[in-house]
Length: 257
Image 1: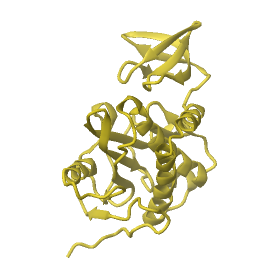
Image 2 (image 1 turned 30 degrees about the vertical axis):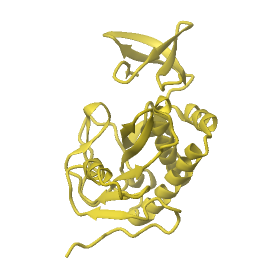
Image 3 (image 1 turned 90 degrees about the horizontal axis):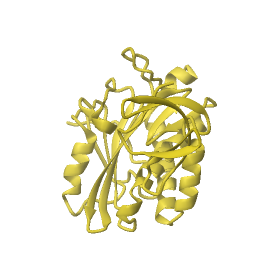
Image 4 (image 1 turned 90 degrees about the vertical axis):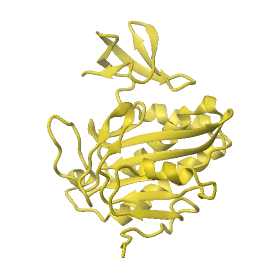
């Protein structure tokens, strides 16, 4: 008999109301993708596990998580109202939701490292992978895979990472943290659905790591000094380099120091 360690959240309208729990899987995004291929899957479906063995992150990276200590899950949304041209807002609303959740839980500095890693005191605490199903010029469904370090204490060097437990010096109940996070995700998704793109972008820019600070970056095998100032309409990172604004896409720029 499979025991479900998670309960359907009481604080959301639809997010997580259809809950699919598996004790172990390679990737919750992969399972969610299989569900998306069934036309009957409901928006807000939550796929969650206590042990994700082959979690995937941005840029082909892996997401490692000790069994039973953290939150590893995927959510299915159906933003058919959103044009493919605005697809970066999928990164924006998910990143902001986790940012909101952490800001409500701790007093430490929380920032979004473009495009959608979440940092606390310059240390990574959450990774997000958004995968899309597109039909024509609009989205049929999206899968938002989220991994948040909750009670993790052991990280392999030289990974610069942290967890909620390390920052609070407490052990946290995963069900309680899940409910709080899902509530924040739903709020930001409803903002997206209501067309509040300008507000979402403004909040995202304000939360960006290294914004309006001079730092060293690397791009195209060269290092340079610059300051993050904005993102463009397609989500590219805009960096002021000696008075010239340069735009960078995924995999084109690295943060050095």
